[in-house]
Image (tube, rainbow, N blue to C red; front, side):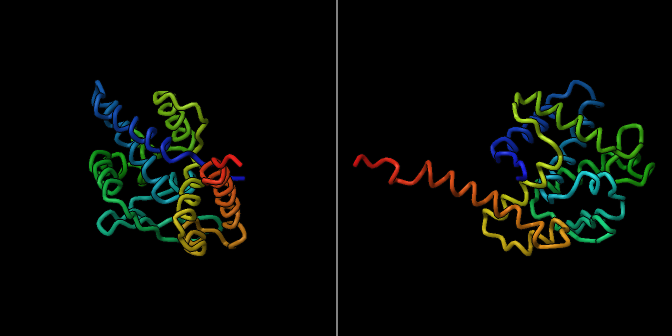
Length: 200
């Protein structure tokens, strides 16, 4: 079963990054937090894989029309729209702040030395903010993908659209998220249904 992050935990996690950026003591820390916010927001906004995020080049990201071109498994291309203004805004701020580093390595996500961001660096970043926010759940980059898919399914988005957005070759792979939704439904009915409070 795919492990997801409770949505209130995602909110706490993202808030911690913005909080660190706001209260950064140095410009170096401020810039790192800006990039970290852009990375985390994009993972959650698109459900892309960590490898896909780290592989993004300058030309794959079009913030003018808010689209990201992703090269998935087996060189399959898919285009995802950023549907949230706050996410677009942080990506634009990051792009402007890291313009030289981005051009230096031709990857959209770069470190301050001008080298492409690695998946290990992203994992360390997630662990850092999880710890700072006192979140006890161990969060991995892939859990943002699972949370993205499950949240859309629970919001009644057609599974075929979710399949397309995740870049799954087969609907059967995407159907694993229906099991998560069923499990959540079971928990909701077990705890929230009024029959549970009857005294008969």
